[in-house]
Image: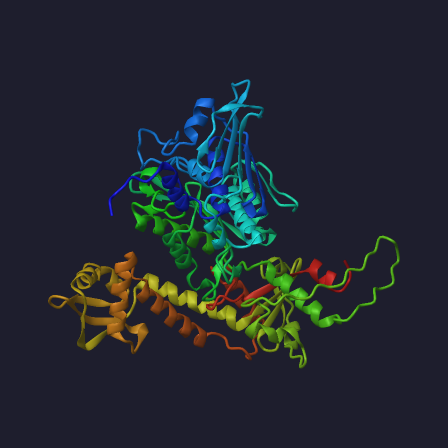
Length: 609
């Protein structure tokens, strides 16, 4: 078959297939253009899930009639300086979005610069361009896209329902709004009430307010500020944002928002750094909630490795990962013993569900018109939360068991001002009840002491090195030549972790010492796992993870067991150690070690509020 040149219309439709996957892709491109144009207010309106109508209105710099002519041509852009593809300082830059959209839909652009008395408009209908004409429009730009995919109807059968497409548009707008708190956003989807994000500034408080408007009050109550800086490949870089406490987590990662230079991304390197920073602080299979923003020099990141710019590639991935892990770890460490505020709320709701009948409740006699009886809400079931698994025995007191001796020796009054308060009782030989100035604290003694012992073991490993055990006969492990060379090159790092290896000819290493903490272990499997990890991301986490796992098991067996009665002095000492120990708000398995009940919540439980 003879080679022939494709028509411009076909070329544009092929490009549209790369850029425009669904209505959310169109919204993303148009809103990014508005942000790049310096807009302070952006309004997005969609109908029919974005298939019938997408309208994006901004008050940015606008375009002249000559600009409009070029805006709908391929490979025309105002955002690349001297054609340097490695100095990208804006969100959209390829110059393909508008002509691609115009090739598969009806596209109308109306725009007016601030210094112009009259606006201009251009219409592109399924690739056919009309001449630019005058238009009545305010300062800025209005882009309307109607009948999306009308020129490629086969694409419609690959789309989801209108509701699902509208949700995808909402997610795109929320991510962009989160990255730009100094821009006001309004999103109207169908007949629903519009979502409005008021314009603020770029201070930490305003940023948290914008993030909270998207992620909810629950996240704001348990958010830790994250901040860190480091040296990049060619210029300094920094990370900032907010991360949730380890006890605040979800089954999926939909509440993880990551940004690079203001661009929402889903990057495996950054996700891996988040997972490494939280480590053993959250249950396996759960995801923390966070919103982190990474700023790096444009020359240190390639944002053009994906057609939709959803992925990036870093020039020095190791430094980026180290910065992310260090900043997150520092923020989590400063949280100390703090646990999620939701634990107390869920506990009160669980009590309410158990105490109050599930049938219709007769309202109490009202002494005035201002009183309004509100039926209690059903307690939600949260997997992995305080209400699940081993924590449930606290819900019912069929066989009360309390240590009355706790009242024999009064505790100093100022102790109630401590974060975890003063001990008042031990119930069921497992739960410590303490009084604070504004409520109660209930501590799981085994889970709390388990974390304390674990942190001491980890500190010993970090400060004194890992004790090594020599092998009577060195273990010879055969590997690929490249893997063997890599392992030998990193032998110093591995020695610090307790694994002593040396080269044993071509494609093999000899293991002479292993970490004593591991006991009987599969040396060959351990070495091959390490080689695979070093090959994939350049770090030897497998060995450290195994050591941490063993330390966790040792801590579990060496901690105060459930069912053991403690003296008042022992219980108060446990609370004071928790207050001084990082990460003591959750046990080694990621479950809360205590819940705090505010006095106002308890009074509400008994109808006093």
